[in-house]
Image 1 (cartoon, rainbow over the protein chains, first blue to last red):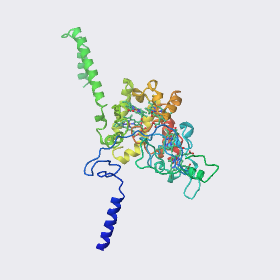
Image 2: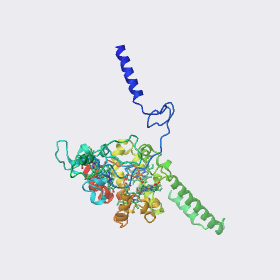
Image 3: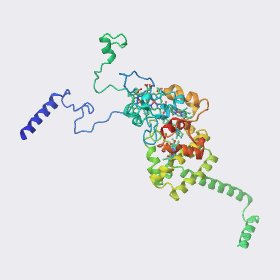
Image 4: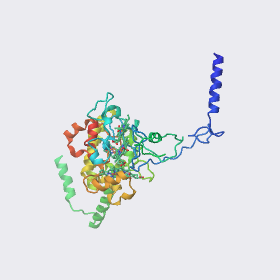
Length: 159
Length: 217
């Protein structure tokens, strides 16, 4: 037993030391150079993207990101503020895109007359954006790029 | 009793023998000013935030909810107090509103909203009172601070610009038609249909008709 613990300890500590790409004293990306014993000063709030420019989706099933700010929008069991604009009956007034038909589907794939309860909390899938550099670099490759590499005639995105 | 009243009446009616007409006029004027000032000061006092949140119903519910909103703290440092949105600034409507407000004081005294649950249950009719007032006076209280002619559309977000330059500019909609729940959480809208049957559709902002009612079933 003691032996097993020792092995785990060695494994864990080598993983922790070996896996670290940070300069000495740099504890983690969120804290920056602040030592673990000190309180880090939080960065100022950044205004979310409110440009209303709809962004390309990275894959067909991606929930689109929200191109406007949602500060103070109430979303609880009493009120769904998002539906004030995105509901089927509201889009004529609000000029917002209607929630797509998948939002009316229950888990058996049947269409309900109204927003399906499992789609009620919009922020589970849709998020606003802030103009900040990502903390971790993304190595995502668009599927269209892969298709193009494979010679697909309908792939339009270039590397 | 009647005789006593009669005697006082006689005293009041008798022309003054001790004071000059000038003294009485000036004195009456000063007295009037003092009374008027005192009355307005008392009125102002009931307008302070402290007064409004003096009872726990307001302090524990609506005041808590106001605090994270933009009308409590913002980059410009301008705060909207309860009375900025709930008491009209024009004198006559102010008095009319105070008389109405005493109903809310009654509400407290007789315990109709003295627990969070009771408050929550009364919340929709209370909100509808506010909505009806703001719809009827073209959102006067909002316009005391935000005035349409001073809005610079080029500095507004695209969504705001689209809405303000159309329905608002044409006068088809007023602020409260679109901006509900800007200072407090909205009440449970599931009761809206019954409330519309009772209070009429005049008390319902446009944004709550249609979609919101649809989800709230």
